[in-house]
Length: 257
Image (tube, rainbow, N blue to C red; front, side):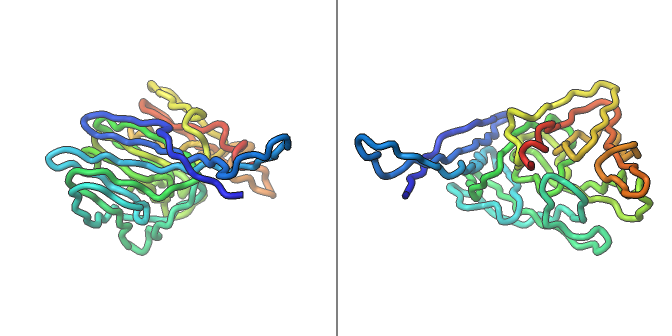
């Protein structure tokens, strides 16, 4: 059976003159059902596309390389070296370079005024706002940001210190004021944005897609945890301490089962 795809706005977020919009494509059969017969129907899964509205004098946006499908407007394109590194675990393992090589990870910047459309994906798109702060993002989750936001890198030594390795995990770091979009197998409605106020959060499993860098992050040993050992039964938990925000997806195991 053939289907036609219809787009609708799933959600949008705007602030400080910038705007992100998630378009969702759903399938409908092209053929009408036969009169008097039950027609079982298995529809294809939905697809999502991000529209990044760039405005200002000039406005600016950054996209993950390969994310762009097409654009409209007067936008100049340039490569930005955000640095790179290898990752362990993560919602989605990104195509990043090893920290030891010193190679740069390039992202694509757009300046001017117009609209950028990303390649459709079956993953969900999580929208958020930066308020003059820095956000550490899980490997492979970054899609785009718009506004006064710089994309760099953060070397996370938490896991390396726990296992005695000399290399850290390198993750994207967004700094400034503006909007950002992340991709995840978990719908945005299932995320919990936890506001920590001089508190401690311990997570057994890789359920955090992003956190503000005002928080201290460590990987600590636990009787059971993310990386269990067959000999000792010991594992690890991720600990976040201080004041800041954490994007947590407690339902992730249900989507991956």
